[in-house]
Image (tube, one colour):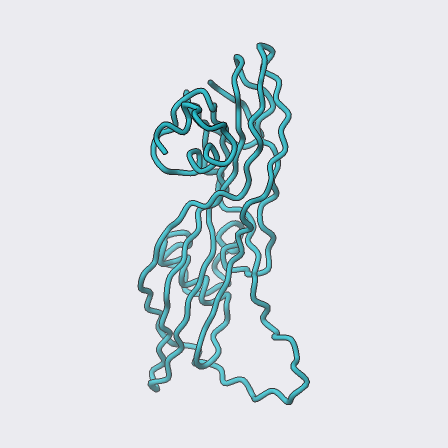
Length: 223
């Protein structure tokens, strides 16, 4: 079964999926904490020329939205609305002298290859790579990317993102160290599956099938 979409899609019999590039990210931690009514202590800032070290960096594809299964007739028309099941938000948590969240995400971006390893400062990045350093951008909207398919079937549309996270240590020459954890995402994924066809692996398509296809559907045979 094959679909067409506003995003760039790859075709498959059981699923259609494509990583459509970096989109926006949103922060779940504000730079300015809410005042508690007490006098805040002066923030101790980290040095400007410290060194980042990353450990435990991992990638996870997360399902962000899925539609109910819809019966499509011979005309191939489809009109679905996805329900959000997860909202991706970049985040930076740190203990020790304050480090800019943008600098932390800049370093993580270089670590995973999203940002050119030769870039030395934030001023050297732009466009999609700059977006990776912004903790305030919005999560991608759940917009149906599929408008027409060929042939009848019981279809489910889904969306997801590819998240990256890891632990960091920021060390200054004077011995002061900041430690923490950071998370962001790089890829906006969209696809469509048929409940009447098996789904390979344990990726986003199978997660979507488990949510929307009826028990006993061929799409769930691998579950």
